[in-house]
Length: 291
Image (cartoon, rainbow, N blue to C red; front, side, top):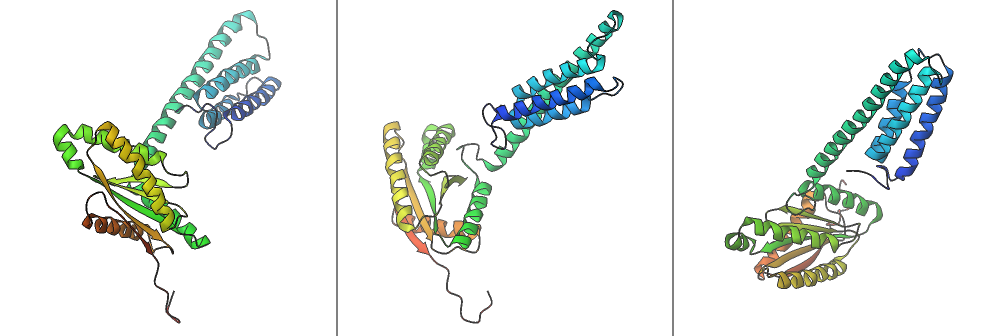
């Protein structure tokens, strides 16, 4: 996963690249000035790894070339007798190849780790978050609600007739539908919100700092968008949705999701394609009771 414009921490990759090259210049100056029996190769390697981690493989390769050049000059003091120059050229080429190979292997390892991390939070079928991701996001929202006293809402979505789609046209078609639903839900929410597939035919939305009225309006907009897509693409499915708005934070993310799921099942009783919205508020603590 190459980083072209932004580094891993959000700093422009160009700044990391320039910083790495400046570090190589400084190291090269020391390398040139001190006895050639001292090698700064490990320090060049450290600069390379930092830049490769923060700015990507291409930036790392640039620092690798600069580092190998600085090492070569530092080891000769700028010149060498002709017989020794052949050996030095070979050693310099070896250092260059070594740094480039390390840069490549480090980039592959970093991308593998990033991919594994992403998979631990992502549902592979729909492309949105999984249950683990959603519970973590809800826990964060509960903490925010406790600090600032603002509401939030969870919409629990059930895809009606998904099993019928699988039976009629195959499970791959059902997976295509789930992917379409995940992408559409993801595009239809704010950056502060979250969407996840909880498994099977169930999705969930976390609507940050949103009360029941705002949550219902947001869900109805999504339903209108999805209804048009389903009709255009010929998907004979509907969505049953239960929305629970939390005026006060619940005890845990699991409880919040459970309450939203209960709303979804209440909506099911009204028929497929129904929407049911409610507001939950914690019971007031009795005077003198333990918190």
